Image: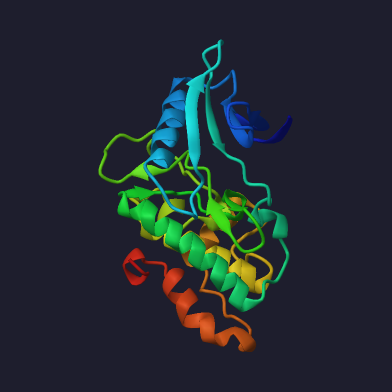
Length: 239
């Protein structure tokens, strides 16, 4: 029906699945995608298929077009994403309810020995005002496998939400997702992301060096929670 969005190597379209007469989202690899992206795309499909939780996007199919490009058929979520609320200050109890849903979804991801590595507002979709799902597992990684679909020493993820260890290309575990979730919570409470700077380099430096931001007095009861989520050292965060 229409283009919903596009990234560097894929486009997402709204469509109708004729057999069941339901709206779906179809994610199609771009013609310029090389073999490593084909690998990653298939891995993403297998990753989502291994996860079953109300706060994780559902996958219905993976297949190829006549020209060889892969596509995924995914659950269509109509409520937009969290990035569309940029600049909005969330009421604290609502922010925590939404963060809890993301955390519950991530718990299932981590139980499967996977890490998402790109938890950010654009990858949090609203089914409705109070129900959200995690999407885009394109750079998720199985921590039990050595194969890496990204080049060694290349930063993956989004710098504004990357953990200090992710920003420095160090080994990652589930706690990198906890940090990213903490940045999202901070942004929801403040209405802006204090780590985000005018340049990529300064943003990365902020995650590595900047002190954990202090919440306004009215929100001080949430400071210990944020301190633990946003600790510079992974071992100081929630497991």
